[in-house]
Image (cartoon, rainbow, N blue to C red; front, side):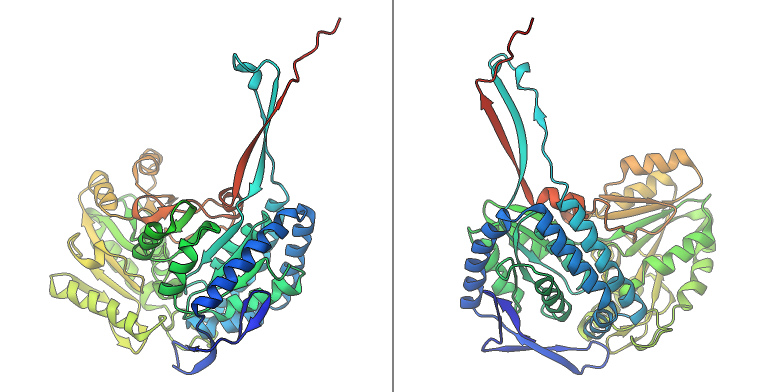
Length: 477
């Protein structure tokens, strides 16, 4: 496939192979953009920002609705591409592709609802003859840098709100999974989006990301990925608006009064969807000692029941990670924990890029399996004394993206909701849950800003304050 830069589909002088994590076969090749292509994208996006700012909200609304219809019509093609380039089971890929059209429709609506407010200026002692109101204006050029794990949904969570609110976008998809992003670019252009409103540039993120993020023509950066890359973007960005959705090590607290069957079933979902390669995957399970052994007994069967196999098999629930080196890394962390005194409950085996769904018990807070982001199909279980001890362990992390609690005690649940250091809090379910309309983001090293279409639209617009002078109230008899 070609990349779309400066209103043209370009081949590029250098190419990058896109390979299947499951089979290793080459699926396609995409350009490895050079510095000149990045400059062309920036210049074109600067022109496109002016075009988009002049476009009416109704025109943007209609384009996104047409794109939604095209996305729905091509959902199976998108799902097949998504499954092939990520190794994601086809059933999960279809779910992700199916959400694309609805996300575009939601963005179309939210972009059409931009509104300001009147300001009570006459409450100020020096503003008796003033009238004030605010407008929402697009930022201008938005750079969207997306990860490999949800190459359709997370692309749309960035570009759809940006376009809906009148910005131009430079999209830099993950090098490992650019094919869905290029197909979405085709869809948006076919729906009538101006050619200078969206650039999709492919290639190495380290070099291209620095060029794009440091450029003064860019006003807004939206990035999803590792905390380390987020810190590098922050260092080079300069004065820009940033939305950074970064790493996590999501905890679940299981109290002695919890429904253990429900907690075990949630673990089998939250720890292993997309082979655990989700920012809000369940990683750390903190269980009160009175039910610790019972929970380990309860969780074994649902985890061992996860069907592992080829991504195109309809029965498969867990398949390859994005690369064999990543599966080997997670395997190494599991083995390191076991060597340090932890206990393997189930799983741990690896075949190439496929790691069996794994549960490790007796994990201590000093172990990497507890402290660092695993981003793979391995769940660490740790015993705790009581709620206070569990909360302390949950908050003992540089991350704070999503957390959950299982209990029947409403007082305990509300104490947790208030005290846990997390941007997303779930009660009686796994931390791995998201609706596209909710505010989504983290605290601490899990990032800044919020996604979720309405909230992303707010972050991708500026507030403009307007004051009309000389409009004092006339006396009326």
